[in-house]
Each structure stands twice: as structure tokens, then as C-alpha cells.
Image 1: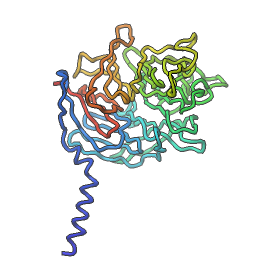
Image 2: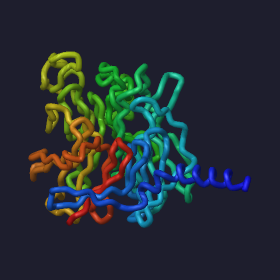
Image 3: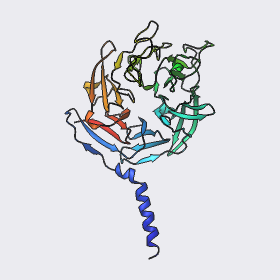
Image 4: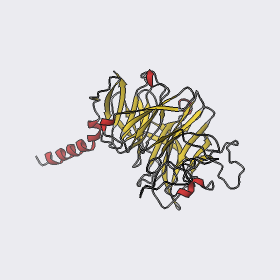
Length: 376
């Protein structure tokens, strides 16, 4: 009899430890009024799933901002934590951030990450890559530990995108110090462009400029939260947080200045006072779409699937403050057009987005859920 208590205790502990995966054991359809899709809950009880991408039709890799990288098996909904993750500075808005398989993933196995790393100067956004062997990450490489340290712990960025010419892009916010975004001597407030191995392309716009860091592709950004490359139109799209009002969708060109904080459509948090010298200025690239009030974008995805043909070519962004899925149609002239706000009644801060091989739309929420839209 005396052995029954410890056995029962062990069973109870095991049950509690596996509660998150028990909660994710069955896909649950959530009633929605929209006839175009059905909404399903795939997993819950997670940390904040900040980045998310498909490795193949069955496996979804995702990050948790507190410092974990996990695999969701969509055949059985089991969740496995990967070992070998770098030490992460998980504080405030910093932590493990984006994850994207490289463009040659099926051949070389590289998976790319951004995360907040502690340095002597402070926490900085870092681009890294690693390979996966079973449940282990191997060959972890920090490709660029950026020069972006400040006294704050917010505005780290940072999403990853690849073009079709062997380059990787990723963004960094101003790190809470506005002047950084106009200072080419640091990486804060920029979109960076590297070769896949982390080296600097010879044709980057500031290569050879002694007053600028050579990794910089564009600057004048406040806090980029979405980045996606359109391989058909050869466009790099970006979405970023404004202050109180003034979130932006931008088309990113090499070497351009996107204005923060010289120009802005937003106001100060402490009062109805405009920021900067106005909303436009010669020599500064104007946004193609502005959100007033701010939706607080959490991500950006270009939909090119077959499951929702009427949405093909649209940009999707998760909205954190206004809690919806934001769809923006792109015109034949490659300009943002009409806007649609989906899932407003869900009341969730929508963070990461991923398109499945079937063309379904997966998204994560700050409440620790992974959900998906499927056609009816």
C-alpha cells in the first residue's frame, strides 16, 4: 500500500505536464458566420507562438517568445520541443522571434531564426541558422549579431524573408530610441540584406560608405513586424508599427529612407501631437497604406494558395491591438487596395501567419493558440 501514493503522485505530475498537449489532442471547429471558411483550433496552452512556418505538409515549426522552438505534427497533433536552442534574452518584447526554412531547405536543411541575444552592450536582434536532426538542432550559427543595443527591451523587429537571388532580409526596430532610425552607423530601424551564409553582398547600397553599415538595405523604420517577398512581381513588402496611429505598409527599395521619425502619420502617446515635420518630405519614401487608428500588425503574408482563390495575391497581417485578421487586396498596379477585417469577433491578438501546402491559413495568437482557416 505504501507504494500507491508515490505512484499516484507520479501519474498526476505526468498528467499535468502533458496538459498542453492533451488540450491540443483534437481539432476543434469554432462556429463562424462567414460562409467562405471554417475556423479550427489546432493547438492551445502554448507560450506566445511568435514565428511559424511549414517544413513540409505534416510538420509546422514554431517559436515561443520565451525561448523555445517546437514542432507540431499535424497528423497526430503531438508537439515536440527541439533541443539545442541558443540562449535567448526573453524580456519584454525580446526573445525567440521568427523562423523560416531557407530557400534550399529540401537540399541543405538550413532553418533561419531571429532572436534577442544578450551582449555586453545589451540585448540585440540576431540572425541565426541551424539544421535539425530528429529532435535536435545542430550546427547553430549566429550569422549577424547586430549593432542595435539600447537601454530598452522593445522594438526588436523581426521577420525574415528570402528573395529568389540568394539573399535573406530581416528587419529591426528602432529599439525605443527614435534617432537610431536615421543613423546609418547602427542597425536599429533598418531592413538588412545578407547572402544566405551571412556574408555581405557586394551590391548592397551602402557598401563602401564609411558612414554606414554595409548590411543595411533600407532605413527610417520604426518597428518592422512583417516582411514578405513576392517572387512573381519581385517586390519586397513590409508592414510596421507606427506610434499612436500611423501603421504602414511599404514597398521596400534599396537604399531608401522610410522617414521615421522625421515624418509620420502617428501621434505622441502622451497627447494629440504629431510626430516629426509632417507626413511627407522630399527624399523620403511614403507608405502605400496607412492605418489610422493603428491595428498593431504582428506579421505579413502574401497569399498564393488555391484553397481561397478569391484571396490570391492578397496581403494578410495579424492585428494585435484591434484583434483581427487583416486582408489587403493588391491591385494590378501592385498597390494596396481594399481592406477586409476577418475574425473580429474572435477577440484574439493574432501574431504569426503561415500558409500550408494545401493553401489553408494558419495563425497563432498571443493567448497561446494555433488556429487555421479552411474552405467550407
